[in-house]
Image (cartoon, rainbow, N blue to C red):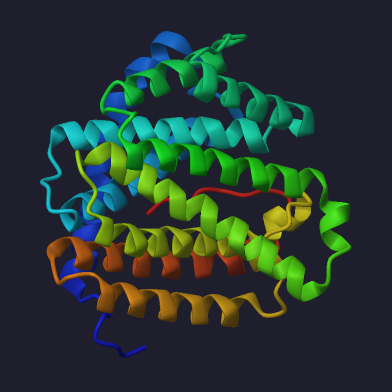
Length: 307
């Protein structure tokens, strides 16, 4: 692969260093909350706590890039916000993915109540930890800022749509192949594309409008890379995604990756933030290609990639 956007060794080494650093920051932020309110998470099966830290560290690198792209410094407060956001997203995803269809539907109903009424009844320690993290996250920024408020609601709507598609898979399968693929592709794009806007909205006081489209593009790419890495695991658990329904996911992802990266390289002004974002995406793409191949013989579970 030879292209002007291709990260150099220095940039890739910087990405590695940042992931290691933000893993420590995530631990400092989240571990006291976990120990105080849900200590069972640390000893839970499938290394849940470690996966939470890994997800958070990678989100922090993306947040670092987005903050600099928007023209701000990624200081200690931003790092704290990104850690809270990562912990919140990990727990939210677990409510959707790990406890069955009824729990998934209940999460959507209860989170909609939280967003529209500002109220949430805590039923167990896991929910208590989620509520405490999201409360601390919402306290960090004016959530009535129009861009951030709209992004939060659009992210929830994308999650809700994803759940509805999953719980009504028979209806989805009745669509033509082309229509089904388009529906799944749009769903993946909206989920992660909006999530990166929410993260950026929490990190900076004002997100320039010219950045939003490009950051949405980066978020959409992350979702496709992620779904490719979990292709076989998602199939095992009957989760339909765009990447596990296309005929040749390797070729499809390669095309998506190259077109999205070229768009980011051309559309974002040259900056350390742009180079960091592209460097992270390239690294993420390469590791998930490997994960996809390794997971082929281990369909029954997914695992985090630790570097």
